[in-house]
Length: 122
Image (cartoon, rainbow, N blue to C red):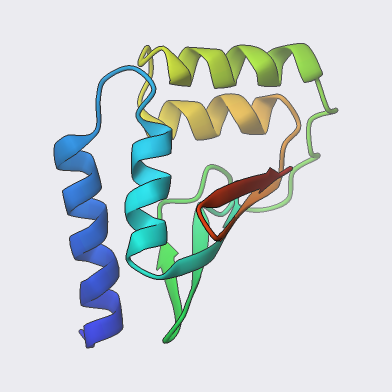
């Protein structure tokens, strides 16, 4: 493991150790921003996350939600809002959030941090 991946892992561990049960995402995003993460791009079906950092990039590969060939669910705004609110209220795990977002037709999202601001695109 190189120092860039170690830096990311340590930031993730720290964020999880101080993350409140409710509304924890902003804490995670801020810790990652302070660790030098400028962009975090998620591909939901593959559970792949790419972190673009000041010093370079890191890819983190989770267990895919789907394998093989699948039709992408149609976008359902109401289901996405429900998934986001459920997550914000601390009523699910991160894998459950990803599954709910996928079922709502979301294939990816990107977090962009810049000068203490966070932008989320779906």
